[in-house]
Length: 270
Image (cartoon, rainbow, N blue to C red; front, side, top):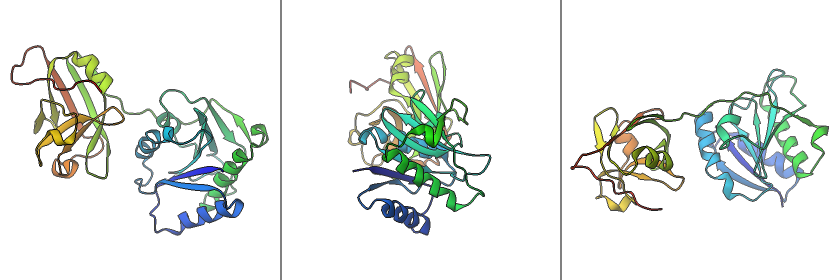
């Protein structure tokens, strides 16, 4: 049974979603359609990439992911197929390639067909491409491998001696602020030193890290490394991003100290 996932910047109540699902099921009623998210902010490739990148590995090999974010096609913008670790991602050539995978994808293909004009009907090409892949149609018959495509660069933390300057890259549904600072980077730069995490300049400060939210009292500001290994700023039973006025691109700074008796490193294992 074929699996097709959908990620869009549409609202669930828009007719676009029903139209696309109807067209997929018309081609094959047995197709399993999985909604990843339809609440991506309009044209926000960073947000879409974060969501897909951190859940796609849980899907079976051969899954086809349709990504309709800034999806319009034209004679100047074609459709791409990104192949990575046995899965396929169908997206317009809008810069998503550089954001979607950790490292280089296994291959990128450019689909030959393009719409006569830019409109919603161009999504028909997304669907047709998905079913060409499902039918194991010869790739050369409808696309060609390419090394030339738009590619955005993900935001990475700036590292200096005893200092990491990072930023918020995602706000989840609990209003937790997820940063681009990985546990690996934190441990490498920090080298088990005491530290302070500064949020919104020097307005808020954290000097220890939790293993879980419940390590802090209700309403207390906290930091921890989440399930995908990124530093997360949260408030136990609270809305950190809302209360601290955090948004995507808000600055998060970590300073490490050789000696600071009032702070201690509590991160262990895991």
